[in-house]
Length: 295
Image (cartoon, rainbow, N blue to C red):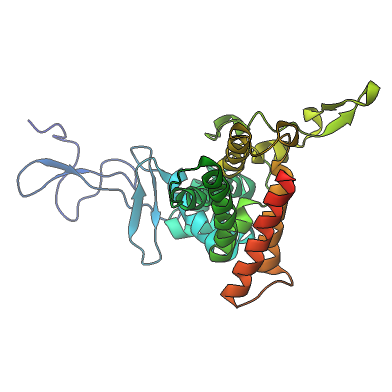
């Protein structure tokens, strides 16, 4: 039985029974019911019948997204960041690339900051993936001590190489974008070895003052690249390479050295085209970090 009997005439010139933009049931050659996807005009809201987002691409063809517009916008914004860094992440441009109206995009992101924060998370994950791949490439050794040092050096080198290979994403990974919804962040809590700012107490003792750490600092410590560094330093303590009293906050000088070198090679006076010269600078920085930690 036809469930739409009497609702509307059929045929190529028939008017739809409901308002413009709704798909009407039609029959394909096999006789099964088939629902046409709606064509949304410029004056409509951009929301399709099933709750997805609809719009037109530059060719005028309708494009439809089945409830995954947030991810589609984020992917488009990651591409923008890859091309031009954090300043290139603009919600309207991401919407244009996806093929939806700005109004549809604003239903998922309140503005540029929310979208940029989502891209920042993706950029941090790509950096972590590069570091993890480099660490896994380290050959197992009979002695775990040099292996642990090699793995730590590998993630430092991967950090710098990522900055040089993906400057737009690297800059976005560390852009000043406040966390918009940390409760929805899937990244794990910061390592327990980070003690935050230290305050002098009576008797000369120093105690952590984590409450003084900015929201952006606490947010950054949740990301995998920082945690990988923390885990590598913990491993040195476990193996007896790094003295326990040298461990608290050791991430900061190590991170600062590698990040500073990456920035100088990328944007500063150390910009050099000679790959061998860059590698020599990187090797010097990594050796200095290890010597400082183990001294």
